[in-house]
Length: 72
Image (cartoon, rainbow, N blue to C red; front, side):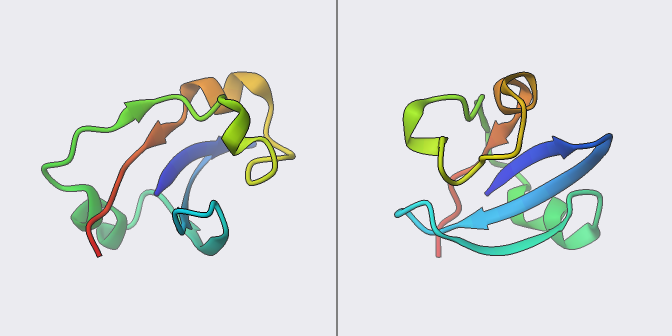
């Protein structure tokens, strides 16, 4: 799950390992908080493997993003 700013609003975007997006929702929801509870995020989604999945986001937004690996 990538938590990223989208025009001043925090968005949680859920991806498969292939970087295919499967869901998107408000990052401020209780559900989002529960999903990442106790997890330590990686900082930034500005590596090349995120280019296609996060096109439309600025480099600054991508660098500030928090990347969580969820166990499914």
